[in-house]
Amino acid sequence: MLLSIDEDAKRLRRYLDEMKFPFPVVRINAAEAGQLMGVDNTPMTFYVDRKGIVRYQTNGTESHGDSVNRVGWFIDQLKGH
Amino acid sequence: MADIIAAVDARAQAQADPAPYFTGAQILIDRGEFDRAITLAARGAVVSDRFIDENLSAYQLSGKSQGSYARGRATAADLVGWALFLEKDSPAARAKLEEAARLSQDQDVVNQFHLGELARAQGDAARAREYYLNALSMAGGPAPLRQRAMQALSGLHAGGPSAAVGFDAWLDAELTRRRDERRNAALKSLVDRPLPTLALTTIDGQPFDTSSLQGKIVLLNFFASW
Image 1 (cartoon, rainbow over the protein chains, first blue to last red):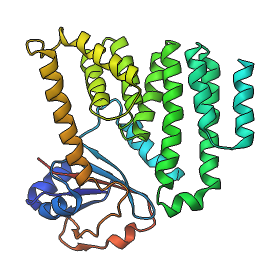
Image 2: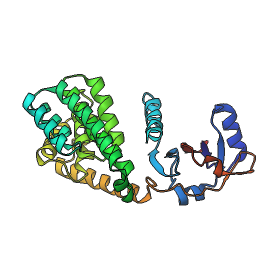
Image 3: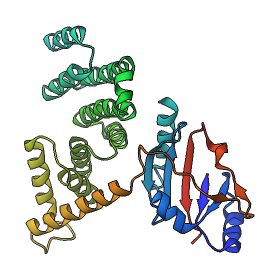
């Protein structure tokens, strides 16, 4: 799920129309994201297991060659245990 | 060779924890028996999982079961990766060492050192520097290994971007910066903590009910359109 901290709804909508992400996108207040999740720089990614525990946290973008492996790897770990 | 395997098996009969497999794998690596080391390390990973499964109640009481699976697998992956590196299979070594890095959250000194050695062998000085610095900015690891990391960095310093700065001063600054960054990140990290309740809205401004996420594996990616 993608969470946007954008304040400008119009700009966000234009961006989403362009990018056509195949994932659900929601919005969150930037200050709240900073306070509750420590999000001070985007992108940040959190991997949460079925019990609602944050298990992995990554900052920044993945180097392109590796991203599918890395994201898929984290998800596999959560599926396993 | 047979004596090592026999010793490991005997020890494993007495107590089914993975330690003898990992120690045995390290000994085999030291003797240049890379294939057998890989086999032993892989078996150690299986034993490690089983050991935790069998003692799960004890691990869960301390809340450490998740980390323990990862730790055992990280040790195995690092041993296998290092054996592959010494066998000169760089692509396979890199995959395994990077897997170990993810499993240990980039916080295992020995594994970071191994990644440094691999990067240096591949001629990637910048990456090698990162890994060696990472290793040295953390406590632990055998003294000879730390020394080799220091020597490697010293060798890489002359040809690097900070060559004009004295090595000691540069190293001190780099390690201090990394320690501070790590401490700040650890304080802010949510890892192993429950996901806070978030107030979310849809694009159209309607409230989004996060209870629909419960019981599922969730990937939350925070982004901005700029």
